[in-house]
Length: 254
Image (cartoon, rainbow, N blue to C red):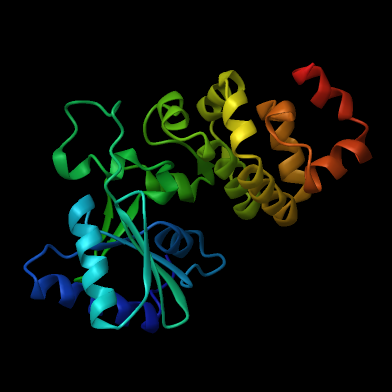
């Protein structure tokens, strides 16, 4: 694991001290930054995500942080606040708990277990930089270069089909292998309506995957049978025409 940068540590300390001032538990730094420390790859410190693993508390902490530093902010989905601070995007988010999460899951683990992939489930406590791998699989999957879901993949992709395309992008960006059960689930999923309603998002993230690694993206599109689950735009359109596989796209929608 690479060391936490001094600038990020300062922000973590500031967030912790604010939570302590208002008698909250110390929050965690989650998401891309902890993941990339273990991957020892490109820094993700320009996009920091803090959570208390409690929707209302995370949002409240974000509002207090913005008020203290005189920052503008936006709130999405009632439990996700985003702002800019020290030239960084800062998020305070949580609150989503899958309806399909096992009933015997501990209360404080319900939100971490509702995240998408094990590699994004690592938490760094702001108070003392201690590491928490609630799933017990995040660090090991990173070391083994595997993308796997925390819950059963059918649940993960049902909760949010955007995660299918995020898996494609993460695999290309970090040279990670999709687990067998993720591959199997994506091959079976029916997301026709989702693709129609989210073509801009899908085009953008697939273009990101192609830009990161053309070969890995092509390999995964084939493996995941995504031909008719990606809109005919951008790099994907160019790939289909160049490779003369345009028939595979139309075969799935005609």
